[in-house]
Each structure stands twice: as C-alpha cells, then as structure tokens.
Image (tube, rainbow, N blue to C red):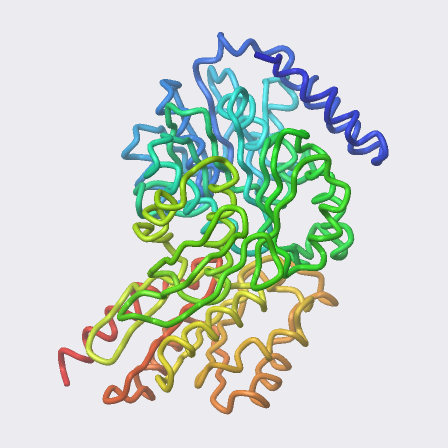
Length: 509
C-alpha cells in the first residue's frame, strides 16, 4: 500500500501552477499531523459535530472503536439523538475543557478563528484535521474511491450508486450528505474495495480554503452538473470550474470520468482529462435517457448505450433531473463492471433520500413534500416535476432562502422565474441576514414583487406560525393541493407545525 504522505507531494505537484497560498496549505497539512501517530490515537473530539457530515463521520469513528466526543451549539434532533444513541459524548457549548485528554481534534468548516476550542488547539499544538482530511486518512486511503460531484444531484446519485453496488453484492462503503433510506443511515463501512463518496465543492475548514473533494483522491469521478453557487466563497463560475479542473487532474489514467453532456461548463472541465471519459444526457451522449410515462406511483424511463445496451426502469423518483441522476448511476455502474440486470434491480428498489422529494404528510386532498431545493435550478426542477406529475393540482411553493448564496442577491433576478409552475408562493424571511454585507443582501420586497408578475398569489412572512395560519385560512380542502417546502435549513421548524395544524383542521371539520 502506498504511504498516506504521498498525497502531499502529489497534490503539490498537481497544483504547481496554482497560487502560493494553495501550496502552503498543502504543506501545512503535513505539518499539522506529522506529530500524531495514528496507532496511538484513541480519543477523537469533533468541534462543530452536529452538521450532517461531521456527525456521520463521528459515527464512523465510533463504529471503528474510537472514543468519540463532540461539541456544538444549537444541537437538535435528529442528529443530536443519533449521536447520543451511538454513545458519543456531547457538549452543548464550546469550551477548552471539552478537549481534555484528546489525541486528535477534527474541526468542522462552520468553525472560525476565535472559537475557544480552535484557539486552544492552535495554542497547545494539539493534532487537528478537517473533516475531509480525516475521511481520507482513516477511511478512504487504500480504497477504490468513486466521487460524485456537481452543483445538483450529487447526494441522490451517490446514494443510488451505493445501493446499486450493494444489491449487486459488492458490499461497498459510502458517505453521503443525506439520510439514505435503503441503508437507514448517511454512511456504511463495507468490507468491499469500493468507497462511494459525495464530493462537495465547499471549502474544508478555516485552515483549508479549498474544496473537500480535492482531499478524497478518487479513482473514478461522476460529474452531475456545474453552475454558479456558493457566492460566499467563489467569485464566479470560472473560479468553481478551475477547482473542478484540478479535481479532474487528479483522476489516474486507469480511472473513469462520467459527466453530464447537458452542461457545457463540464465539457470544458473534462477537456484535458488523462483518463477515459463517458457522457450521459438527453441525446447525443454515450448514455442517453428518455421518459415514457407515469405508471401509478412510478416513473417509467429508458437508458440506452450503444456499447452496454439498454435498460427499461421504473422508479419512484420523478422529474428530468432525477432521470439524469439515474442515468449517471447506470453509466458509472456499467463502466465498473456491473451487469444491466443488476443495475435495474438496484435502481428500481432505491427508496431515495430524506429531504429529497420526500412526502412527509398525506391526508385526504393534502400532500406535503419536503425538498432540499435552494438554488433557482433546483427550485424550478422540483416545481416543474410536480406539475408534470400531477397536472392541474394546486401547488403551494414554500421557500426559505437559507443558504449563504440564497441570502445574497446573487440570484435576485433569476429566482422569480423559478416559481412559474406554482399557484401560490410563500417566502419566509431568511435568518441571520445581518451577517450578509448590506450591499449583497437579497431584497425580499423586490423578490416578492417580481414573483407577483409571474404568480398572482405571493406572500412574504417573517415567522412560520404566520405561514401555517395563512395556508390553513386560504386553502380549499375540497380540491387537490400539494405543498412543497423548499429549504436547505430548518425553515423555523415548520414541518411538524404544519402537519399538526392540518390534522387539527381536518379532525374538526
């Protein structure tokens, strides 16, 4: 097995054309952990544990037999409950004493300089890593890594690909930023050689301002999409594309890159790849897909490849973007040797992810979906999918601008068009807007006014209680209604509130 330290020299070589800052970060990674003997590490502490990725990684270490603790503020279920049930000691504030007798500290990307634990780590020369570092050093090294990256669809495609490999008897490991229903978990540590991971482009930590996916060293890469996002750390699409090109430059000549031909930006990204590349898309690609019809609760589609053959599939996933995700997984699995019949079985038994087209309530004429949509493309996609699937049903679109980009005016002019398939639009004011520079903040009044030019019924509220009250007062319970709640944040806890409110209203009619 190759030494772990090889990654530093290889990454430095790969980025010989990059900035001195990046090269210094990579050299610093070696320095920060060179004093830590992996065999001597027994106790690991997570600073900022309650994010879904950090919490899942903590569970992985616990499964491997390490003593694990973690600290965070504003911890809440389900992650806090999952961590407690797994035997991980939790601290509900950041304090120096939380780090007592710790051999290694893993610092989340939500932690900034000035955090009491981070300062204690730096001042006392305690070994520390980012989440991405720890994933590679303890879990990915020695595995055949498949990274699924892109602006949209990477969580669904990662989980689907993991399920295909699982049903094919490959016993893979996987790590994804959402709850995979087939596995009842965000991760699995399998006995096989394959590790399938969601490769996030967001930066790793305050001491590593480079994307997480750079550290994963994949042999195979699936690129689902590429658009501008993360306006808090990237200046434009060109900057994001540069990091994707650097990721492509790490794929060995014996690997594979599977990419969406629907994004011209990805064609530029993979142009100089040293490995085999394979495209997927609607037409003119190595793997193409077509949708035929909805049959009861399932979408019927077909994937065609001139070399690997064709497969007809029925899936509970709906919408063109999900057909694209399915095709990406079919292509990746085919290239890596899984037979089409096994792929078909995996796709058709895939149950999806939490917060992705998830029905959280269905009673009489009311259906409520929860979805992670927060980018204009994903908002448009989910609303268009529901309209195509359900026809003339009344669609209530509830949206919270919760992401760092969503709270900015980056998509101020583009967002309104994303709601054109809705009948009613309700926008919740974003939280912590004061943390965004005033000149960059989203203008909620303008957003509401611009949506009204497309959708007549638009409301903007501050509190979730106001939203629930407005919907119950104005909804027609005698016609079919679909409510889609879109946020990558908590939406003020509206999910249980609105379900309870509808139960009460329907019980007392």
